[in-house]
Amino acid sequence: MGEVKIVIATGLACPQPVVLAKQAIELHDQIKVIVDNDTALENIKRLGTKMGCEVKTEKKNDGTFEIDLTRKAGVVPAKEEVILSTSVLSCPFVIVLSENKMGRGNDELGYVVVRAFLHTIAEQSQKPDVMIFYNTGVKLVVQGSEVLDDLKALEMAGVEILVCGTCLNYFEVKDKLGVGVVSNMYDIAATMSRAGRLIYP
Amino acid sequence: MNGQVSYFVMLFKTMSHALKAEKILRHEQLPHKLIPIPKQISSDCGICLRFAPQHREPIEACLNNKVEIEYIHLIVG
Image (cartoon, rainbow over all chains, first blue to last red; front, side):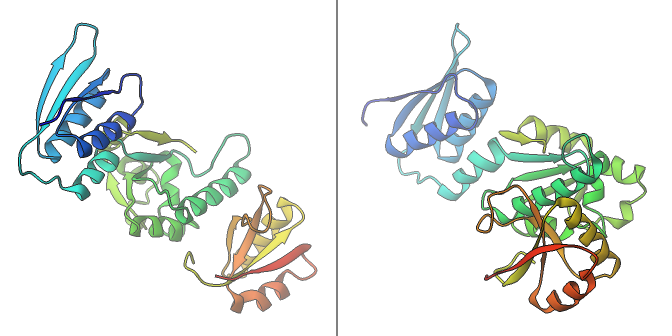
């Protein structure tokens, strides 16, 4: 077994620490990752487990954590699953539509811009992992919405679409849901809390 | 309508013309979609109306004398 590769990932935003750790463990049998926050700690522990490593963590007096990952002999890491863990499970890219328009000031213009935005998101290669719709944002996901085709295309491409059930009830359109799943504040708050990037257009 | 098919985009001098055209087409139930102007046509942050080739004729006829159309461009998919 070679020497221990040290990865200093303090001061880095999600998902950088887990990406650096993943690159290091692919090249070395034993690595030590130093991070300074709980999210990075949990993500790297999860990465280690997925990669079939022995995982040891130690909290230091200066508030940082040291995570030792040691590859177990004969364990081949499941690459596909690891990719999933770094992007979708650890630090999802989330877009929140809290209104059926984009920007404040002029509603007619805001409705034009939000349609242009959703069309562009549906066409670009870097798609979000999750999209959340609440308040008047739910009007975008019901039957008759002019962006329904774009949102359906996003859902087909694997984007998870969460729609606030309370909001559908409020506008009395629960029976008209055209795309996505009826969700609740537990899932919405949890998804927003673990987001790597959160966009409010 | 997000596949690799050819379509037309219709550009207008101002956004209010585009919105007026959209209102007319919606009323006449002619299939169209408001999209950002494709980057290969203009880097301006503008909007245009997209429609399938088979709808060009009725759409143009419908907007004739009502809205000033800047130009119509074919996007080959």
